[in-house]
Length: 321
Image (tube, rainbow, N blue to C red; front, side, top):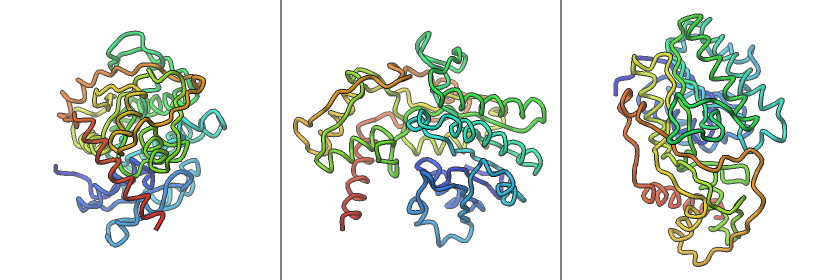
């Protein structure tokens, strides 16, 4: 894939998905700046890139506009991966709003002022809320049922506004339950990594509700490809895409699959009350991103899960050593 930009900035670059985007850009020879406040991001996610002369690691909060501005000269493409996690938004809604809405606004303003040629804005399937029809396409009504969904929708709207008012080339990607190596495995992380860690540690799993809730899991490397295609496809300007594999798995089935891969028989599962704002079913239409960007997804969920669990097993073995 030919990348027409010489310098890129990735927010949330030390995070799970952001570090994979940074890694791909750096290995493509792009001068790449990773911006992260390290609240959730980890230096270890980027450690393997330290010897690349085109890799630059910056500690900065995206709500600090003045500090952000120092890193924009020469930047041609922005991949805005940073976000307040859904799992913590209830604890501090004003902070959630500041990161997901105000932070996005700062980045868009700076991109406009510095002549950035491409802005890829990351959003979430949570902007839809409970499904009014299946599968959910990009035209589905937007009725978010969580603070996270509301603040991410505000970021989306700002991106579209800058596209319309200033002709800034923006594209929005809505993520759905991305999984893979480096995903946060603490109790505020992703469900795949949480289940994997707890089973490796010999601990019981917790499922909120009865386990019948469905999730649409997407392999992290596919998400990286989506970012690059969004940045290099002219038809993506001003567009919004569901970035989802279309693979739907229940949380109960996921627990059973992870246990099977790890060789854990009859894992202990504790069932607790449903979480506030939790969406029960995700059934996503990805025909637009397939058709317009030509993105092919990993369709073998078991294979992706095995690669993720293998990485996690190696990671926790090294941590214990």
